Length: 331
Image (cartoon, rainbow, N blue to C red):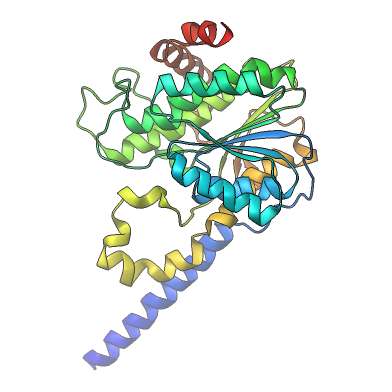
């Protein structure tokens, strides 16, 4: 009788898990990019493009005829990825370029080079990220997740903004995460210098910052032909989760694997929403929106607070010395 109960219980758990995973699968959504638009003659910058979602995004956009600049910290991996994209797509306008988002100096050097070499920038995809790493600091002393995920892209975008405006109907896409709903911006301790470090909370703060930055940027871009949108691409099987330790857990591997198999996307699948925002003709005028995969959704309440977004912009500008960086890149 005990054995029967165990089997019944086991079947019930499996059924519940399977049912939940199906529901999660529906919620996550996915599929190929619904737009077949080509982008011949357009220049696209993708950060963090040597692996994962960034690499697949570069590959898809190269297939569509764009000139692709793959901006990465590790040039060895980036050159290999660019070579693979060129070989797969037969598009020879795919280039690897050094960009370390954990270094203000590197960001300025990258921007100067791009502004010198590129007459127009049509799409900027801020994709690179670190997730739940140890309490590391950037070269400039910023908490790593906030520094790379938000401040690095904040500075990069602003340094390239005039060229984006000059290029016509340009698009800025910030890859955020569903994790932003658990985020909180602590203006008293943005860099975790006073509070005990929490890897998850720090990641969620950085992803909330992505959405707030996007919304404030869109407001500042009103009247121009440049749009800015953020998105959650879905949960993907990439190197981003290497610091979480879940893949090393026996419990995760044995118990949660069936769920993960159902809901986790490949990097190629997770790249499709970013591609959609980059090319879809029906999104040409859409700006200041948050997308959950392909669907426009309302972001978390704290991500919609205009005062918080304005204050974050101002604090970010101070931290990266934006005015000085802008003058340096114009010199």
